[in-house]
Length: 281
Image (cartoon, rainbow, N blue to C red; front, side, top):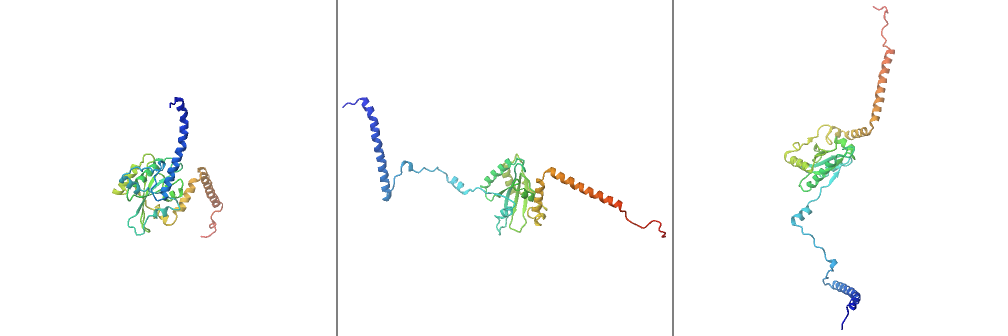
């Protein structure tokens, strides 16, 4: 039999339509066999879309590093929690103090919008601390959000404070260091940490906090005066300058009026003494 080309072309759609139901029956039959084998306890052959993807190959070193390293948690210090937070990791029987690094930062009002590089450098340093054994605990004090606590510490934005926390009631060593707004980097802070560890905090540029303004052991803290004074300074700082000048003007005028009035009263009522020429001799 001979088939013309036109006959074959016309028959192609019919063949395609005939194959389509056949493929569907094949798929259903394979699914049936797979479910039957599964219920009978046999091994199922996974379909093409059910084949699990192969995991990327990771070396033993990379796997151990990724599973062992945990990022350090940065605490946010407030007026209500700062003492409890700093004392939290201290064990009662500890013989060495727990070290804290606290970044004092701020916003547009307290840092004039220049604390961005400092915050970035501190964040990168904390990431490095996650891989360094016995690295300090880390926290942040934002003077924009906690101005009273910054007054309690007498701390300003863009500074680094270090607390060596022993079990209470032992004395606490507190150090601080000014950070450059624009040039500080994570490498600088890591170098500071290395020098502090090997040569001491004074060699790393830290200054010891002493005297009445010590946050824990100062005179103001012992007599519970630090927080009231900090509130007073905070309220004075938010009073407009024109209002302060008006208050000083009224106060000075009142004092001047009282002093002038007292002088006039003394002139009007001179001290009485013995009358002159009373004949006594």
